[in-house]
Amino acid sequence: MIFSKKSLFSSLCLLLVISVHAQVQKEKVQNIIPSSPTAASLGKYGEIPVGNYTGIPQINIPIYEIKQGNLFV
Image 1 (cartoon, rainbow, N blue to C red):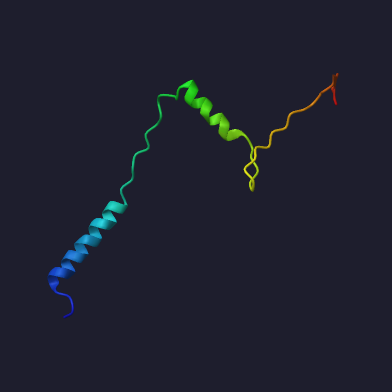
Image 2 (image 1 turned 180 degrees about the vertical axis):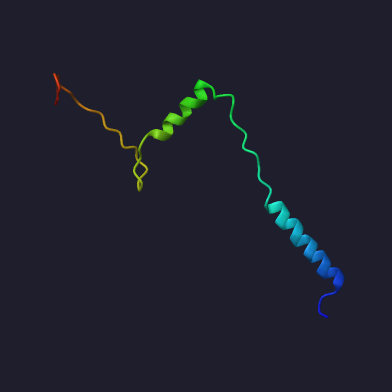
């Protein structure tokens, strides 16, 4: 016999403990307190589009805009 009964039993117990631990689900805790306005404003910087290859922000500033009724030029 290659493995003794003691080592076989201990390895079997170890496998059972690992499989039981892997099936434990964590409870999802809801965020009841909203973040402060200054912390929430930090998320606005992530909304600026940037180029995928260069990382340069893609900022478009219109030079002029003419509104006449429903017509925009």
